[in-house]
Amino acid sequence: MANKKRGISFEREIIKKCWEQNIAAHRIAGSGSSKYPSPDIIAFRNGKGYAIECKSTKNGTIYIKEESIKQLIKFSKISGLNPVVAIKFPRNYFFIHPNELQKEGKMFKLNMDEAKKMGKTSLSFF
Image (spheres, helix red, strand yellow):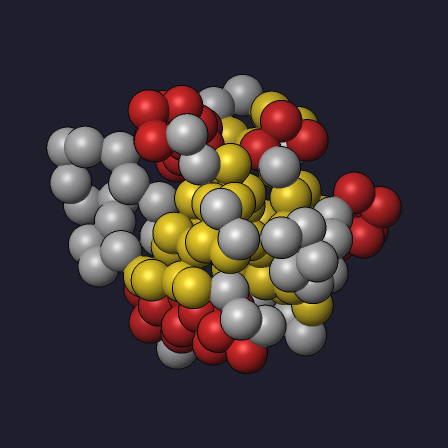
């Protein structure tokens, strides 16, 4: 599966999980292709809102462009939504605050073992 298709599939998976847990969520079509910052998903429940950036990999390590995280944080500051990065590794996914990601050059790098230590594996943060 191409990277873009895998990413969209993961976004739709997160949307489905949100609605199953009574969290209103919507995918932002074209996120990342606009000159304005926008997350992949916005989600709300009981007055709490989150801007979610989704990333997936077929490997045990993921590299995320610094610009993606900067855009998520910028959107979150302007909107008042809480920023979250949803990361999917093979058969595992995690929800991580962007401040927990470790920068390596112009990328953020995270392996699955690190994600298990810091990330939530469910939408329980709502």
